[in-house]
Image 1: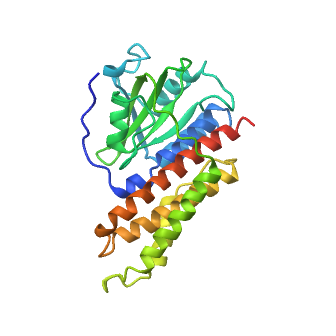
Image 2: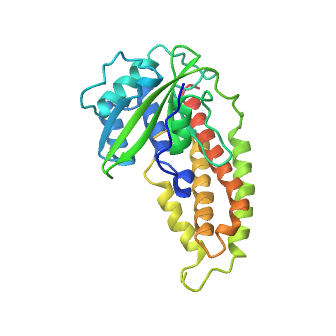
Length: 280
């Protein structure tokens, strides 16, 4: 099976925060009947953008027999497709959540079957939404791409095979990883000695970026533990971003890149925990 060729690189900011994190939770809340279709559509347009289209990657297998091919599609089609493949998927705390967040970055391969087009697409873009299937050997992944700064094109990939063994990280372990990352990153930024062109204090810049990463909001009822973990990830991501924009930023990549892994782990763990908490 051939893989799609990555089109553009993913910036560090996109690696540290993606609206896909929030969209995954809105989609999950809707699948579990906690939101109306209008509410999830409003959330997607606020989180990702006003216009959406769905494209099925036929080369990886079309589970819809051409239903969404050859005609204009919309966010309503995306929701219908997700509902279709998850209709008979197992729903239990111990089962795979109906939807999940998948991230990729330096040193991190996506939690998808190796060598598949879906895995290659997430590696190129940095983020996607995993959608469960009745068949435990099948996963679907939705990968967004911004087209002409106005349209979010969601490409649907069907993956078959054994995904990498999951690294089971509890929210507590992920939070400890972030705490250690926060201490390291904060220490680096304090010792940098930012150039005179930066008139604002680093801590103020971190606060402003934290606001950027943290917007827009999450659906009501996300577990406090998951919300706290994502908020901590926002702060660490902001510190990394500020550090890299300093004069010494590029030289600190060997120290900073491992911290980005802690951010990604926190985000995927938080989404997984929030989805499982819905069933308790």
